[in-house]
Length: 319
Image (cartoon, rainbow, N blue to C red):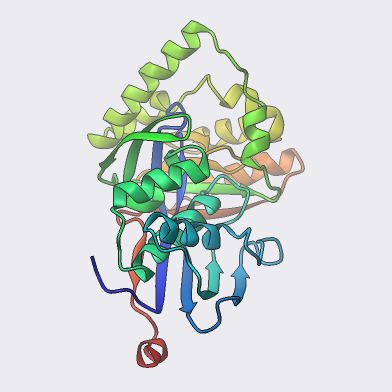
C-alpha cells in the first residue's frame, strides 16, 4: 500500500457498451478522456469546492451528489477511514453526457481511482470494479473505463461476478452523437421484461462471433456479429434516424454498426486505415433526414483504462 497523498490527477477514457449483442457484458474503452484533479484539505473539513469545465458544465451537480465525490468518499469508507476532510475537485470533461459514451462510468471510476490513490491505494482494482458496478448498476462501461481494451464483465444484478480483459483490436470507430440526451434509465424502461427464446439464441450466437471477430481481428465478421434483437428493436423509437444511420453507414463502408450503450450515439467500426469521412457523412445525413443534428468523431480503442497522471509542476512543488 502506498503513502496517502494530498492531491491526484486521474485520466479516464470514454467507453462503449454492448457493441450490438453483448448486452450489459461487453465493453470497450475509447480514446476520448475526462480528467479529474482531486485534492483533500484536512484543515477545512466542511469544504467542498467543485469546478466543471467542458461537457456537462452547468448540469453536473456541484454538491455531495456529484458522482466523483460519492465514489471518492466510498473508497475511504471501504478502507475504514471515513473522509472527514475537505475536498477540491476540478473536472475537465470531454465525454458528452447522456450520449451512451460512458460519462457516468468515467466519473465513478475517476472518483474511485482518485480516492484510492489519495488514501494510499488500500483497495485492489477488482474491488474498485465491484464498487463501480454497484454504483453504476451494471459492469460493462465501468469495467472498460477502469481496465481499458475490451472487457467481458459478468454480474448478477449489480453484483460483479467476474471480469476478463482482452487487448484492444486494431480498428477505428466513427461515432455520431445526436444533439439530444437519452438517460440510461429511460432507455432501459423501453426494454421488455421477457424476450423470445429465438431472440436470446440469436444474441448468444452473435456475441460469441463478436468476441471471435475482435480477438482474431476478423473485421469481416463484424457486420453479422453486431446484429442485435435484445435492445436495438425497442430503442429505435427513442432515437429518430437510428435505423437509417445504421443502413447508411454500412452502405458507406462501415464494418459493423450499433448503438453505443443505451444511445443515442451511433457507433460504426471502420478499418484502421480509413479516415471515416464517408461513414461520418452518411451518419450525419441520415440523422438530418430525421431532423436531428449530430456531432461526429473518429476514435480508436484505448488500451490503458484509468490512469493516475503526473501533477502539474506547480502542484508537485506545492505538495
